[in-house]
Length: 163
Image (cartoon, one colour):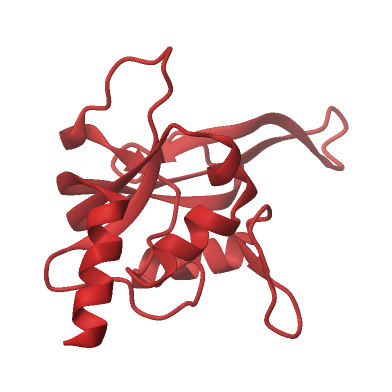
């Protein structure tokens, strides 16, 4: 997501610099405060009906984390989350940067310009394959993942704010 001048959040837009900053620092994608907690870091992923079940030990995501107070805000205001009922809230013990995605460029026939040849290509840090890539998203592998019920999280937030 992107924050415009004046602090308004644009839930439908992702700024690549902010995405990278939030992924690297485990900062909340909404408020940019630390999202990592003692019990793990919250992420949202999608589990669509026509896809195989999510394998919790093999999740690779480009979605920055969320701090617990911003989860209800995101679920309520993000147009993608409101519209798509397949979002799953996850708590990860660890998030390890694992690669980037972006546009791959090749040199033009006269060697005078770069031509985009593939969009949204992925390149892992362990086996980089695309030297002509302009990366726009950072990915992390999530480790020690459990599914979290957003209602349980909301109840926890209420009890900790009153106690």
